[in-house]
Length: 216
Image (tube, rainbow, N blue to C red; front, side, top):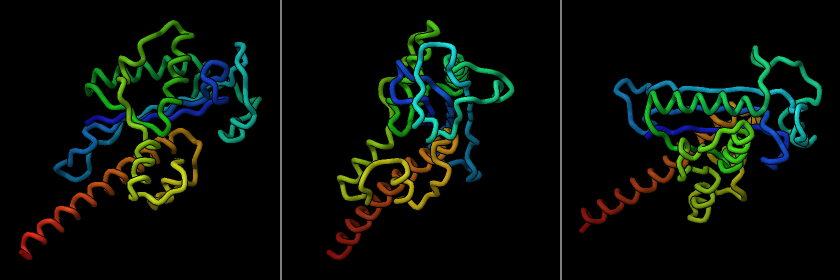
């Protein structure tokens, strides 16, 4: 299974009124297939930071900039090129096409992934590009939903399914949140940790069943 982890930073919570500030992604190829050398395949990565959106009628929320550590007035050039918010989404869609053509289909995963996809989709629509679902598919993995399920099943001790709380519960470092690249890597670590927890429970149940049979 190929898994594409995605995270975005934005100027607010509304994908129509607000804009993208950063997109980060990583593609894990054959994510759950052990490699012969034990090292696995290095993930493919994408990251782009966009200019503050002064060019249209969008709005900027100061609270979002505080969380994302961005400023209202910034240098004009980021990452060697001056990408507009919507053009950054086009660059990302092109990268996704390249990855799909190189590795085949993938499952999209993120923390509250519908939020990220909605912003990318709206940005592409403003650039007259439709059909993002043809790349992402209609069935995506949301680590927030997976964590909520594990919490209800008694397998994860968290009060809420935030990325920070889940990471801490899994013993993962969370310093660096709200940087899209850090969040992508943390989301991947969280997913793999939750899968391992379920696998460990499954193996424990199998072992108990086998032991019970032997005792008889």
